[in-house]
Picture 1: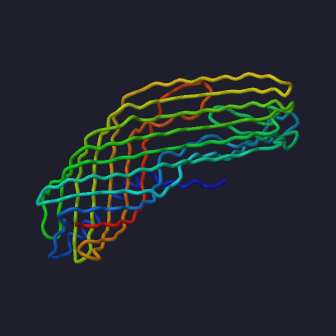
Picture 2: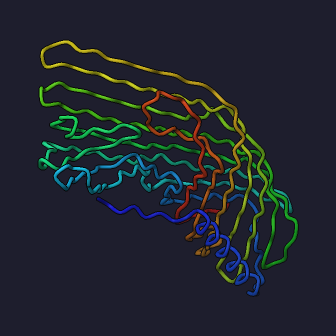
Picture 3: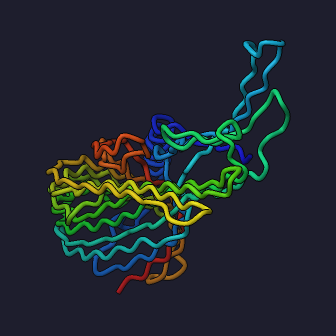
Length: 348
């Protein structure tokens, strides 16, 4: 079983904050005769490797019970957790800004679609008179103790997000080496999360039992105010650009829960059951974004660089985990989308 390693969101935000402060200090102590905040039209394309933190779902366990003693009252339990975590993915972030004098306009965009899935099968799980093997998903368990001869299972945790800022820029202070800008405008966003779990098994009489759960939390278009600070620091042909923004996006979120059961008998016939429910809520979601880039000006028009980026969604609506009570409860988590990036900038 693969070991899942995650970075606590508190430590991640501290790292980004300290990196920004360090970069600002280095740049502020440098000297140059060049303008820190370049004017005119600039276009940036940033390929990113982005990971998802805070949405690791403990979907269930593959477990073993080993009995001991003549009466079987004493036993040892061991289990391997099933973790559904969205994978890190390559994606793009784009930004266009135009500055003239102390004012400017800008627009940016980034998005991510990721899925963390696992699949498994247990065949002939009976390992002895005093032992049995099973699988748990959500609040549901199946094992050789239920006379299951083959157990098939799968779990999936899908997440999809995109955001776009449309904003104005106003220089509030600076000189030839460093400039600080205020950014203000609107954030547009959409967040979708889906949890899908499947379980099926055949008993000793070759009857088949199938269980499926599909839980969703999908937002409509989210819109809200955005306010931020840009710091531009310049020495010789090098630049450091740091940005921190805070937004509050508002909109409807649709929760959906589907539970299905099907029993097919070897002798023929069977029956199925489907429970499907949904409801809608209105949410206000705080979104904090941090960007830090180091750029090298190869020509007056072309720059290349490296950087980091993070977007933290506080109390974001997420899909409920599988359960056996057919509920459609609301689930909220603080989720961070973060990663490293390259950057290509062209100025007109």
